[in-house]
Length: 495
Image 1 (spheres, rainbow, N blue to C red):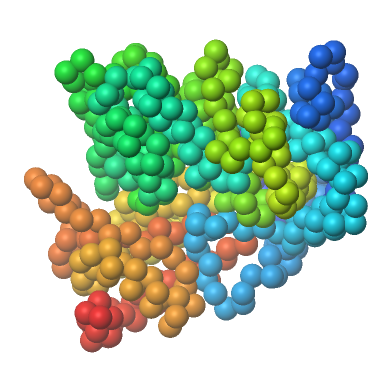
Image 2: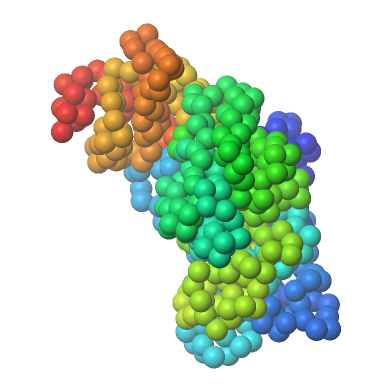
């Protein structure tokens, strides 16, 4: 596997790019093989065969260095299956998968259907090990056995919270010891806390993330307040859940600093929910220092839905972590448990090498794509804010491939239902797909105002390699048309 460096690229708290390295795209290198090469391995004694050929010294075949890179027309061809005429500026929700990776997935699916038994005994585990090894190298983990492949970040959160819930139920933790999370944590994570932790006697501390936000210090100050609350009256914070990139509103948090604070304050375990991170920001799990780190690979890493990785730092307690779907591999370690949870389609886990091949067709590889997306989403966000007379919801250095743009107060978005109706109207009448965030005013906070009043709604725009400026112009023009026809906006939000 060959990586292409763009020079300085930092992301433990936010991305800093060397803007000198990305040139215009050249002609594409000829198509690379869709099926992954057979892994080259060094046999080890006492290795569990269910983990593939080797779980520790799996050598990845290196790819030749590309001298020609993918062109803009070839990028559009890779995503020609996207519905035409739609401004798809919501990559953050479901991601996107290029045609070459979809073709590789179909080959894996057919290979299984042709001879399932041979596939199960001789192909599946080796293929999943190969994918896990690539992820290990990409995130700088120490050992491939620290990396498990699961369906999505929601599954990863359930795995982590299930073992916390068991500790409460077994009496290892005291009643009212707490789990700490950001108030804007993903709703499925909140539901998992409810299902596994609160019903077993644990309490929940929500840290109010300031928004709009202009500095990491604002987030750190609120996080410290939450930790002190969790430790009040002799209680302990058993788990802190930190979003690397919050979903809605979208902000890159100073994750490494927050993990360090947790260590200083005696938090038992730290789980970083990084659903949007892989392919959007640099990930180095050793620098971040969390016990658990999970990220989807179908959002920003070009895999088909759905696949994610869960990193579990090797500790004495890691053996207590299990997949919530119990199959006959239960008790053999989370990576092996996750590699077989019954008969199902595992192709999304097997095409990670193909996704990486697609990524490396770009100059700079994943670093180049991150740089491109970050710069373009900031540029388009500033263009929209200038057109609407509003501001960005966070400073550009606190954004990755998504950014929050204030919507004009004259739209009168006064609830989350209003935000959903506006989103549906943009989809149905303008062919624009973009999430709308309602920002309720808090006690004692004035919020941001434009020339006409309080800004209560933000559009979360994404940029992925297939996006063009036209997508964002469609959103700009749609909002401006609504402002020019206030009767339509009033009728829409009064429904």
